[in-house]
Amino acid sequence: MRFASKKNCVTLKDGIIIKEHSDKEALLREAAALERLRSAGLAVPALLGQDATSLRLEYIQGPTYVELVDEMTAQQAQALADWLGAYQSITGLLRGDCNLRNFLWCNGKCVGVDFEDKPTRGDREVDMGKILAFAVTYEPALTEAKRACGRLVLQAMLQTGGDLARIRSAYLDEIASMNRRRKHFDVKAEEAASFFDAL
Ligand SMILES: Nc1ncnc2c1ncn2[C@@H]1O[C@H](COP(=O)(O)OP(=O)(O)O)[C@@H](O)[C@H]1O
Ligand SMILES: [Mg+2]
Image 1 (cartoon, rainbow, N blue to C red):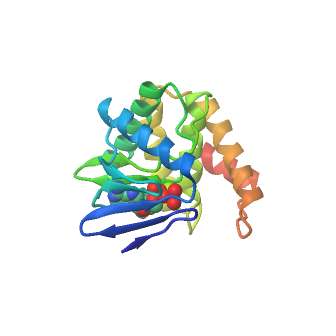
Image 2 (image 1 turned 135 degrees about the horizontal axis):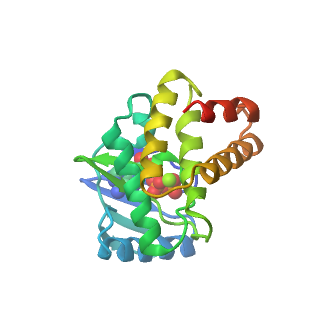
Image 3 (image 1 turned 90 degrees about the horizontal axis):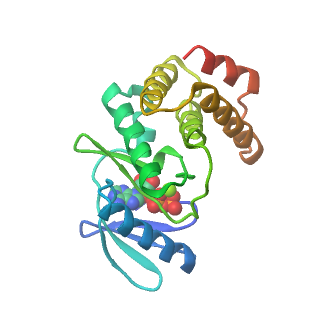
């Protein structure tokens, strides 16, 4: 079984995930991050082995959060916000790649995957705004189901100590960035802003 991946090749073979990296630095960064986060108690896949081009990872069985956005529960939203808060506390850094394919729902827990990018510094609300922007713009974007999902995720994030105005601003920045980088993406800034304000 092969998973959706833009840069790498991620497959499930004999019950183990094989992530073949196209970039050596990224592979080393991801291996180190997985070990550090796991030893700090964060829910991430166990690193089972590595060679020059690939990582062998524990298979986390369950849907990604992309598959949950149209029927998100309060428990799932809280688990996502809590995972993010724990990641930020452990590393003192931003998660960065907040697309919801990097969060899996397994045994009543949120598990994070994909640590190849260099983490950056910044306000914790930057990650929160990005997660919200992703959550409400998967196709079909800005529906009632996305509103319900966005509301639960926002509430959960506010409970972990996020500031509403900063989350809003980061969310709008990410929507603008999506408009720049995606060809067939067309969510207007005003539409995204009023959607957020009605959450
Ligand atoms: N340990 C894992 N267990 C289950 N699924 C995984 C695991 N690691 C990755 N995946 C799946 O493979 C996809 C791509 O892996 P990811 O590490 O995010 O690579 P990429 O850098 O290509 O985004 C993920 O979105 C997820 O669906
Ligand atoms: Mg990924």
